[in-house]
Length: 150
Image (tube, rainbow, N blue to C red; front, top):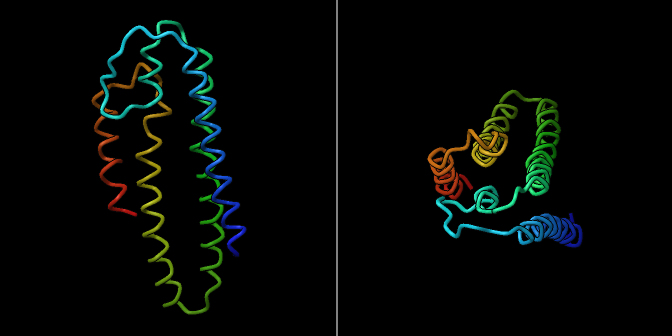
């Protein structure tokens, strides 16, 4: 892969992330707010939406769509790439080579599962099941585990 392809991929990821967050920020800034205190360790979109005086149905739908895109999009690409990697590993002739390659691949897959598991678990839950303590513990775990794994 040459540097132009790498630069295009990196810039497209940055542009996509920025545009998704810009759409959500504009939608949130249109809401009237009553309270000014967020009682969370990690400031996410849902605690900010909970501070709004008006019902934020459009914002909730927009947040759901963005969460689905952000979680399932990269996960799909990772899943496909790991399928291709495993199929290539299975074509290796020596058993020792397959064993070493699977060992390396398994450690990377473990990191991906831990990071995606921590990052995506609070989002599919309904609002009524999200408690501050559960989310704080999970976000603390994700914040401190991520640097250790990468």
